[in-house]
Amino acid sequence: MSGSFFQGMKETFGREESITKGIRADVGEKQVAIDLEVYVEYGKSIPAIYKDIKESVARNIHQMTGLELVEFNMNVDDVFTREEFEDNRSSSKSRPDSNRVE
Image (cartoon, rainbow, N blue to C red; front, top):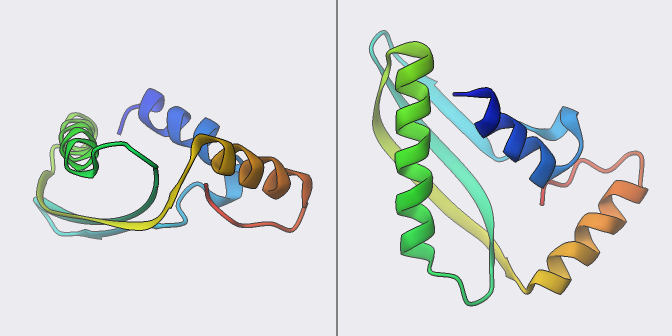
């Protein structure tokens, strides 16, 4: 996956040590399956978000590793308004022991 993909995740999710929280990959010799847990902004189209993320993940995995994405599961953990998301993000960053991923 390209630096910009993970950089965007890092900026969105905050703390570096929690960058892979909510992401699971089962890697074979030529294929990979990904399970992803996400938060979604209220009012956004979950099917459109799923499609965009799946295409981006498949493209970046193939470019970086040559592996084919054969399964992609996205679980929506919660739905927030933009204000709720920003409030949670701010409070998580202010706690040094927080591992919560936004």
